[in-house]
Image 1 (spheres, one colour):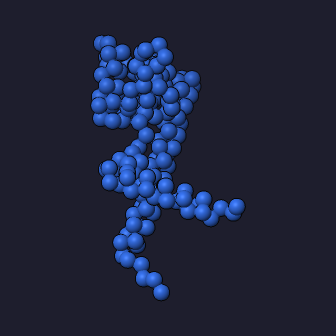
Image 2 (cartoon, one colour):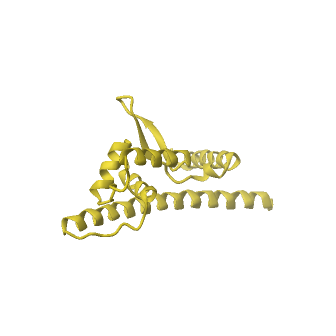
Length: 161
């Protein structure tokens, strides 16, 4: 009879926690994208119905909303246009494009967005996914890679030949 070392139990529990963390991060991304899309739909439909819905968020949160729902790289000009299309009032800013640029740069610096070079050489921004287990540090990232490799090897060994 083989008695497993407690470390093996801890490694299995850690592997399960890392998988759950990755799964929850993906679920959060999916929910955030859907919320952003629905909020944009509400803004657009409200305007079409002649209703004015007071925006309760500032420019930073509005840019987050647009970027989450976008799913594709966007320039500051495209973000500004999308903000206008959902009814966000940019008239209070002297230079609305400059204000959007500033927000996007700050969101990039905080890691919420990342730069993407476009074919024409211009920089665009893309919503940065929530951190996977790799975001928990290099040791956990290495552990997660090791677990994925081990699970692939086990599947190959179990596959009928």
